Image (cartoon, rainbow, N blue to C red):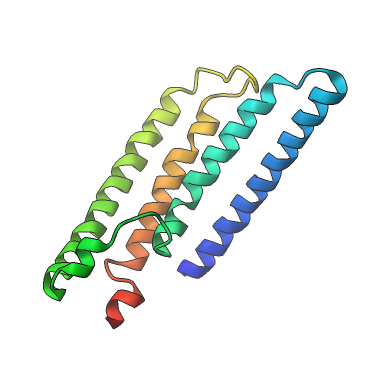
Length: 153
């Protein structure tokens, strides 16, 4: 299930990166050919980059490819390292659930405001926060406190 969800998210994020590349190429081409680029280009590019990072957070975490220092885990006795890993997992669950909850409410609290360049409701770009944190929560829950590498050592 984790693998299928990861692939689906990677596909969506890949399309977002491709879209961002096309938006930036259009902006650069317009700047050099027409003398100016559209104002919405920078805004859309920023929203796409932030969305990509937030949507991939769960995938990166479940694969253990995020930036972290495991020195303490490696130096502790096995029983204490197990407790530390359980604590880290519970902390990720609590923080991601909390951020998903609060960012969901925030995203809809700004619905009456529109973005300057695109003229869309601010809710749309803000939805990447609760979706990203929600996916992080789901991935953490599915993986559990110990991944396969941890279970074998």
